[in-house]
Amino acid sequence: MPLIVAGAVLAFLMRPFTKPAGRSAGEVARYLRDFRDGTGEEWDFDDFLGERIADPRLESIRKRAVGLEDVHDPDALAALIAEAEVIAAHDERPAED
Image (cartoon, rainbow, N blue to C red; front, side, top):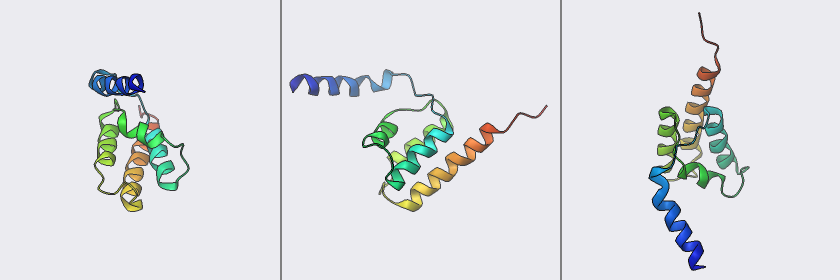
């Protein structure tokens, strides 16, 4: 047991030095939607909240999810999902010549 606790503390302390995740906007929307709908795996949302995202637009969404007063507020989650979906739609649009 002490070894597990020591490993968890070490992982927490190393977090600022780890590379941010390369998540897509679609993935961010899915994490939020699965949590809101209760369809995700047990630790998915915790993993999402605890891992920085390389894209600053998506990192902003993650930080606001972390800061929610009530993470079970469907309206707050819906707003974050909608924002991620707009980013996903924009990112998927083909570039114009």
